[in-house]
Image (cartoon, rainbow, N blue to C red; front, side, top):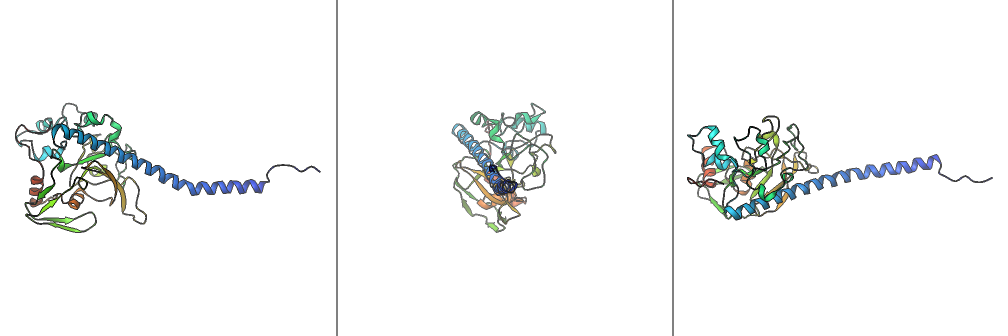
Length: 299
């Protein structure tokens, strides 16, 4: 009798079971690899934005302006809100404010002061930041689809070569690690370009940088009351901490591990930038920021 060639049913089932097991083992690794790739793209975009800022510095000897640059300086209080916004038109790094067009989102980021160097709208959006409703979750839910990053509000229009600040008043509070930090009146804090954060991934829920509360209006101004988005995964064994990307004054970008509830004043306090709500802190903030003399506001 001639033997029949082929696999038995048991053999086929064994092979299928092995393949299914291998897929189950590999899928989480593949998902992590894809997530890491998106994080790398995000950091690369932030580096490109910093490159654009540093090219702007070559022309103006200062960093681009933020909305807070105009809030603390350059805007006479006698002007109406409409007139104040008009003075900001096209003068912020991301082009967020204008009264020339009621659909303000169309101005972002093409009307920003560094877009002529960056030349790509894609650089302003993190691959993990999808348009949609912002949520009170670590990744922030959905953003506005055209701006994922915000600039350190207090570095706007500042000479990038500054390296120290002397506190005018006593100030203190918690840093991102829960440590209480105190800065005494007369204390001088020294900085390096590699330690000063310029760009943050901002949480859309805790800003007007979203589609729900502002109809698509966005602003790339990271103030002490704003919050980061940890879009790039939670830390192993750390339910409350996640990964977010930051770009620094020297042009490099890196992934940091923070609580997703970390706010701007904690991040600023970590490196010695004044921040806070009380009168003393506000005096320090105004002293830290670059004051604009008449006729010398950002262009």
